[in-house]
Amino acid sequence: MTADPKTKALIKILIGVAWIDGKIQPEEREYLHRIAKEKGLENEPDIQPLLYEFRPVPSQECYGWVNDYLGDRPTSENCQQLIEAISGLIYSDGSVDSEEAKLLTNLQLLDPAHDSAEPNNSPILASLRNLYQRWVSTLNP
Image (cartoon, rainbow, N blue to C red; front, side):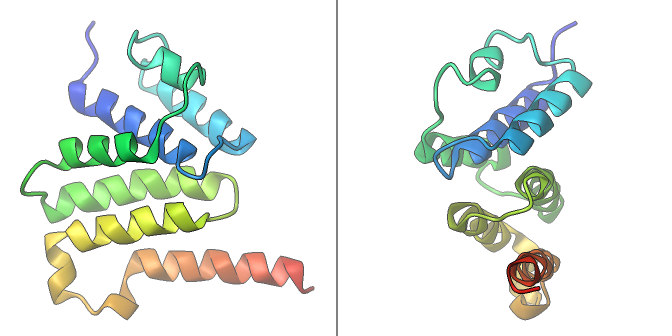
């Protein structure tokens, strides 16, 4: 059985996103391995070296994968699916790094529906705000 190219591309993006802050957190590693296993991709030749951290993924490579995944004319649905998938990974360790937040913001800007939406009412920004508020509240009990 050959893997769906779109699913493989998504797993690569998720691995790249985990590297975007310079290192993979233990929670992110666990999340990636679980997703790769669920999708049956943990032993794919082009996924395995990335999944097992045999080499880091530079942020430029991750952004390249995102651009390839979305194509020249991304649909709102594709952007939202990618944002949701990436958000699951980002939130797995309970913190949002500035590079991760930047990536989510860039993805939101690529979404064709973004122009018509009020930016302050974005579900992604609301999620980020909530996560940040929870994080701050744990620092200042």
